[in-house]
Image 1 (tube, rainbow, N blue to C red):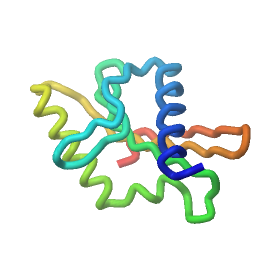
Image 2 (image 1 turned 90 degrees about the horizontal axis):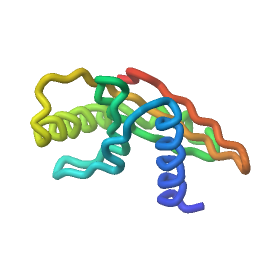
Image 3 (image 1 turned 30 degrees about the vertical axis):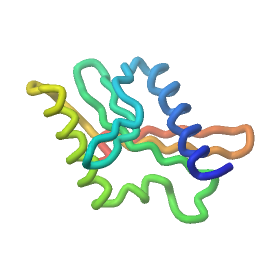
Image 4 (image 1 turned 180 degrees about the vertical axis):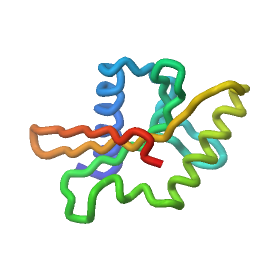
Length: 116
C-alpha cells in the first residue's frame, strides 16, 4: 500500500472512530495557505485539531514521534487561521494525535488527547 493510500485509510478509520465516540466532524483535510490539518472536530463545546499518523510497523519509531515541535507549531498556526476565518472568538480547543496501526486484518487506533 502506498503512503498516500495508507494515510487516507488511516484518516477514514480515525473519522469512524471519532464519530463512535460522539465527535462531530467539522473538516477533513482542511487546507489553507499555511498548510493542512487532518481533522477538525468538536467534542461537546471543544474544538479538537487532530493530526493522524498511520503506520504498518514501528520500524522507524512510534507514529506520534513524527509530530515534532516544528509540526506542532505549524498545526497551531493553521488552527488559529481556521478559527479566525470562521470568526470563532469564544472557544476552547485542544490538539490531539491519533495513531493508526494497520497490521494485516488488524487495526489499532489510539487517541492521545492534549498531545501538545
